[in-house]
Amino acid sequence: MKTLRRNPIFLLAVCALTLQLGLNAQSPALGNAAVAANARVPALFLSDVHLDPFADPAKVARLNAAPTSEWPAILSAPDSPTRVQEFAALEEVCPTRGNDTPWVLWLSSLAAIHADAAHARFITLSGDLLAHSFDCKYKALVPGATPADYLAFTEKTVRTIVGTLRAALPGVPLYVAMGNNDSGCTDYALDAAHDAFLGLVAKIAGEALPADLSATERATAVRDFAAGGTYSVPLAGVPHTRLLVIDDIFFSGKYATCSGKPSTLPAAAQLAWLAGQIAAARQQGDLVWVMGHIPPGVDLYSTARRFTNVCAGGRPQMFLASESLAELLAQNADIVRLAIFGHTHADEMRLLTVESSLAKAGAQTSFGVPLKIVASITPINGNRPTFTLASVDPVTASMVDYTVVMASNRTGVGTTWAPEYTYSTTYHQPEFDSASLAKLIPELEGDPAAKTAASQAYLRNYFPGDISSVIQFAWPEYACSLEHDSARSFAACACAAGK
Image 1: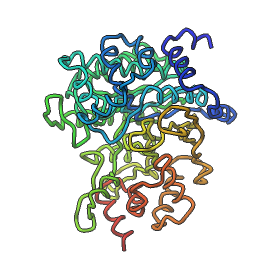
Image 2: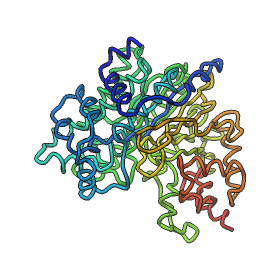
Image 3: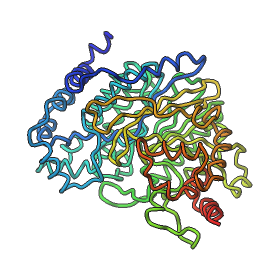
Image 4: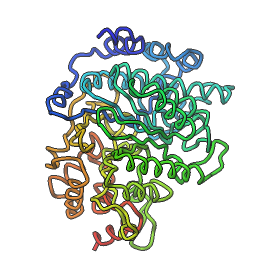
């Protein structure tokens, strides 16, 4: 505990949480079970924190003027008497679809992480650290601020998230990816090269990498992150395995530079970088994990909401503008052991597979690449906050199992955290690997009425704390999206399922 007492950010966080929440019955320390499993590497997966420093608008002026070291104290102070009215007025100017993560909820998350993930060997944070409508809210509350002021505020927000998370699990390496809300200008926007926001965040991310990383590798990671949001580093505790981090905002059809100009050049450069890193890993005999934010494949939620008729020739909504990322990963499925993404705020699984046309061109033979979409901390969609405790085989670099830990409410006030489900016991599969998913997903596809225990479990766990999701009304099509990541193969599956 000496390390925790020396860290002022974590001390303030814990004190504030104890005073405001009355810390008592947090969930059991699931990390002990991970330690008991021989030769398994425990890990913590997080995504979509969306910390909202504007939740109490009256505090924003002080946050804007204060250094990062003072943020926990400011955020932990009692709410202003007019908080509810001022936040409602802010929502009128900058509408969002709900409330992002307030400080009290982030403190509750940190306390649960400290208790349950104490034995984690590494942490992944797959993007979207900043709240929705971040730029709009800042400009509304800090009139006259310059772009440099705004950039400094985004940096302090990221540093607060990363700093408090590292303090909750001292000495545990943290791997950070950027999401579509993580920008120094606006949502889905970054400059095509040497973006100022990425340059600032690269230093924060570099400090969180493993302590035993060589100076050369750390410097290279920081340089690559600053240049384009990518980096390649060894995966802590998993020998001969590299984690390749990308910023796949550049692959989105919504992407533009900070001046508002669309460009395909950054995506092409990032794809070339990723292909080169995978080739280098193959040559060195290493295995690979890939982490980004926006997953490849079909966005079934948006497709269903728009009533797109793919069987009449309509194109399904895709998460990314092209299928090149999914194709690259699937073609290297023999060494890419896991892909981690976020963005949907839901708990999802996918299997990236090679299309038959690509297979004929000489793609590697394998079941495919297991893809885990990590559910969010933010409850903005009405979901309950969650984080994921994973167990990794250090020999095969496969994720053996995982448990999703869910909050009892969406506020952080009086919140307890408990396991929602464990993959192995819920789906009766030995590992979260390509072979197991190649068996499980066709079973889900073959159950169009969602009658089986596996289908019911997936529907229940997809949207933490609430089964009333759109996918229950489009289950056959959603099940198709789990392993048909191209528009063409998805349409073929979905139309066959509808016959």
